Length: 228
Image: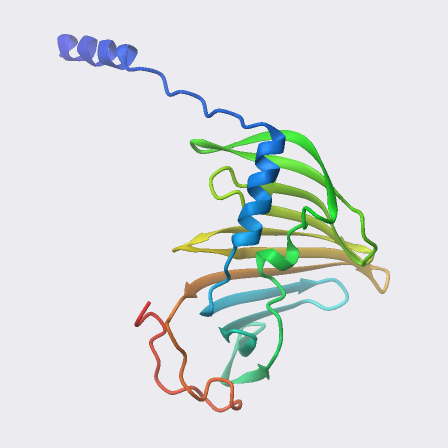
């Protein structure tokens, strides 16, 4: 028993230490970030579930399911404050941009000045944190971005919108870079208000049923995983 313990300690001590990740120069990170944003492709067809939580002047919690193809979107409200809706309340949008895609929320390098704050260790690699200052007027402006050290796409985007502030987090689901959470806070009617969107159960089918965007009728039996 003692011999085995000594051997274990010996081999553990002899094992080479993991090399720390190499920090890239800030200019290199920003150049790769600009290239990654320009090359980014959003999933052409997807379905996702999300929860909407609000607190402040009115407290509310909803569960939704979204079906999206190009600029067409079907948003089904499945549950409100713990009460299941049967059938769901459905809204159809056509020609509507995806408000939470990374390219819409991320700071465009052509329109922002960046100040490097340093690296952030994320597992076996580094992410890179930058303050951001917009050179263009507008209600929405990014104040900080954390850039993934592998894809060089944003992991976290902190922003101001009007008089409120917020944050969006992104990550990989399959081959796609998608939002996982968007939060915002502001003062509404003299009360601190908060809103949180949490996205989960992403599905990336090749197509959606033909009647998905034709009206609020229930969709036919459909397995969105098929053909992924």
